[in-house]
Image (cartoon, rainbow, N blue to C red; front, side, top):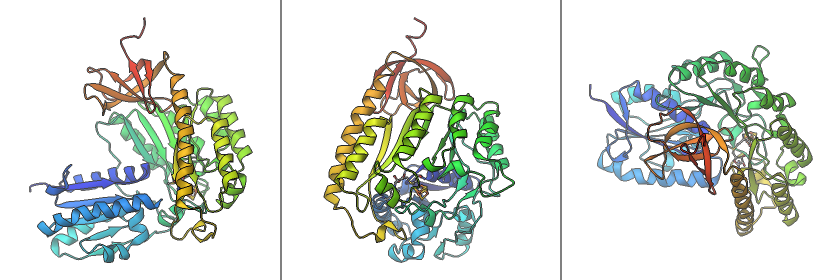
Length: 444
Ligand code: SAM
Ligand code: SF4
């Protein structure tokens, strides 16, 4: 039977990228082929994000573009998965009349079943059961990532922290850890396929296994991954500062495969705002952990997330955030304007910051960090680094691209290098968002 074609667009975080790869795998097993042009697709899927207002708007405009395709080809099926699907459910079917199905964050594995049923008779479906305690990946075939040097591996779902601005606990459900046996089997199988680097994913990886007396903890999980032959590098994201244990900090000095990078979302440099955000740590506790990380692993690269314009954030709070960013000198950050999210506590706070103020603050913060990032990148000039070859450079096709252990992107000439090779490069030039390296200079 001739293969059918599907087009998949993914919005949002690494967790969504991982889920999308799972979807590709499920569809490929059903004789569907992924294509890059939606105009030739039998099925269009949009895997969505609702963590802020902006990605949500992007989803509606993406869907708008597919309307004319459906008008030309009524047999075309269009489905929405992910966080926005979870949040909106039926409402999304009402709002987008040409949509065929909406599958929530724990229902995406039902895509093949829905496609089979729709071949018999067309109907519209919304499934958004959050199934407390259920691991959505249980029973799925082992995850595959052919031809890739680096892969994400989801180790847990959901979150119990209820930061007052965050929609994640409502759209990904309560925290549930995947069994370590499944995770380790998945990583062994990825290693057999040639994957050299794994990034363990969860909203708060530090609490991995805490909800079950039979499960190992996060550091034990890292130790077990360290023992898997073929895997050369381990990363994880995200770690909540309140739960970043001293034991995990020590692991950076003990596990040779654990890369020197941690993403540790600060969110604000004001204790008053952190309290209103329900983050459960203070700035001085955060800085203490940073000092310890740098003591254990002096080269460690530290990145963060910051929200500006949280309700009630005044000029003094914002100045405190700028001060904190200056003092800590993050290697890079993601920064966001606060936006109200449904269900969250903060959406009910009365003292909202005007959009214009938020825009100005974001600009000031990003200008400050731009200089810090470049200055930090410059410290790598002239040094030798280990880089994992990940593919062709986007900017120059004749070049290769990869990352250092500290998670910096490096572009370099290396036509004969294979994806998955670990190479030593000399850093020739630091740019605002990447480094340029050279193999030729080695050994001189
Ligand atoms: N679990 C991670 C953590 O604990 O920080 C990340 C969660 S979220 C997917 C990624 C980032 O989005 C957050 O760290 C936060 O900076 C940002 N974010 C979440 N909700 C937001 C909101 N309502 N407005 C603006 N930014 C938000
Ligand atoms: Fe959201 Fe906070 Fe959970 Fe991160 S820890 S996912 S910011 S509720």
